[in-house]
Length: 67
Length: 176
Ligand code: FES
Image 1 (spheres, rainbow over the protein chains, first blue to last red):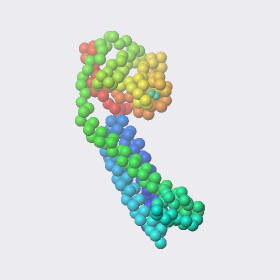
Image 2 (cartoon, helix red, strand yellow):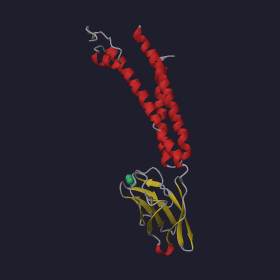
Image 3 (cartoon, helix red, strand yellow):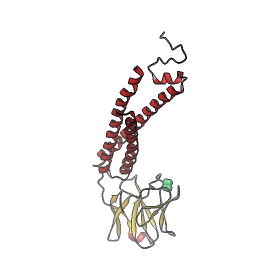
């Protein structure tokens, strides 16, 4: 996979997580408690995706150094 | 001592940050900075995502303790049209305002401004609720913000009038 893809995925998760944090706090303060959990599940999943994408990217990126 | 890179362009370290500091080549510089930038982005994404967790934990715990009861506020004849009365509902910490609007309606809201929690008061000349701190104002009939910084409505307190007495019977956070 092209390295650009890793960048794309990671910045996509940043964007989604900014929105999720905003929606979670809004739902929480508005006492719409049943909406808080779904938002934060999305947030955590996105954080996981960011992390695993990072691990993949790291493998590819640092392989070049060893050459 | 471990050997340190002697020649000008030697990048011997395994650590990006060490290379970045010692580095003199522009191309390499870009590479190391780009890597550092992506790492910060990953960190930011994870921090943002995980920071939603405490909210859901609190929300799961908070779901149960929301039972509210019926509390007497005031005798209706002590509250003439255009006046307001301060009370506390549902607990002693939640300040609220009962308003007898100039149109003759009875409405009640928790009176902490949804911006930064200053107490709002009723202004009968303009028939609206005003927050003195940053000039936020709310529609007195709906509790919805109409001007200034507040973004959310005031929590609405449901009231009932029985035998000339006003009671608070419940509360709605999202309404209208
Ligand atoms: S606290 Fe009410 S407008 Fe800022």
